[in-house]
Image (cartoon, rainbow, N blue to C red; front, side):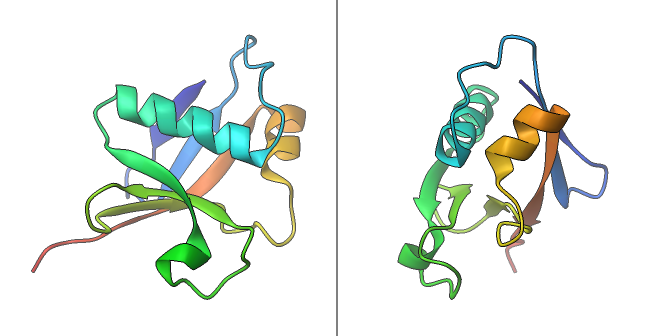
Length: 103
């Protein structure tokens, strides 16, 4: 699995490796992305968005920084696609990224 933040920092492109056969569903995919980001020095957790007070589907999961909300990564098209199926079919997916700035 390859991860690439675009230049503006608002998207994360996740590309498939030939050995990424263990991805079963969206939860497994997000877990794999979380592990990869943590190995690269990010401190992120996978969480259900409604538990943080976001008013979206109670099944939607996302990645965020462990302390505060300085980094949030989610599938902005979660209502119309299955993230894992798209990943397996096309070999890549693009996720939305928000970075909070401190004032």
